[in-house]
Length: 303
Image: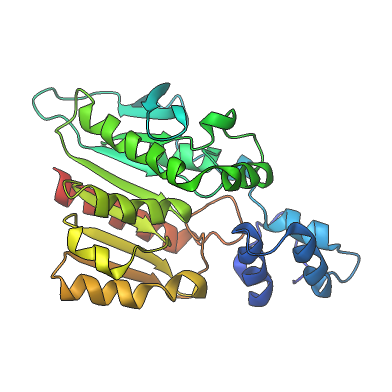
C-alpha cells in the first residue's frame, strides 16, 4: 500500500493486487477475518495495522448516494411481500418514476444485493434505475433475521447462516411480485451484483419469461441448464476477478451452443466489485460504462 493524502479517495491502484485478492477471499467467506488479518500483516508497515487495512478496504456508505431518496424524479417506499417457499415475509425497497404515462407504463427491474443484505449501495442502485425510467425493487434477503444490520461484516454472517435455497426462493418470490404488480408493461428484468449476479443467472433458468438480465460478476448455473434460458443476458465481468471468471468459459460455450442471446463485457484492469462505489475497488469509468450498458440493454428488450 502506498502512503496517500487523506484528502484523496483511495482506489485499487493504491493496493497490491495480492492484497485485493486476499480481501476478495475474505469478503466472500473463503477465509476468516482472523486469517485475513494474519495474512494482511505483510502489508502493515509504517505504523499501519492489518485492522486499518481491512477498514480501508471495507465499504464506506457515506460515499454510496448518487440519487437522493427524495429526488423529485422518483417515488420510493419500503414494502413487504410474501415468500411462502422461502423465509417468510420479505421487506423490499420499491421505487417508481415520479411521473408515469398510463398509456406507456414502464418495465420493472428486480435488483439483487450482494452477500450481505440490502445495504445503502444497493438501495441507491434501485433509485438509479427508477430515475432511468423503470420501476425497480430491491428485496432484503436478511428480512427473516431483522434486515440489513448496518454493517457488512454482520450482514455477511447473517446471510451465510440462512438456508440458501430458501433465500433464493425469496428473490424468486420478489420476481413474481413484480410480475403481478400493477402499473408496469408486464415485462420484468433483473440485475444483481456478486451473489446477486448469480441469482440473476438462476432467475433466467427458472423464469424463461424474464425479459432481460444483467448479472454483474456472479456465479453461473450448470451449462446443462442453459437450454432453459430465454432471456437475453448481458454478463458484466471484471478482468482481475479470477475466481468468477474461471466459471465463465463453460457457460459462454453453452450459451453459444444453444444459440442464446447474450453480450459479455470484461472490463480491463478492474476487480470484482468495481461497480460498488463505496470501496477502493470501485472504478468510476468502468462502473459508469457498465451502468450505461445495463440501462440500454433493459431499454432495448423491455420497452
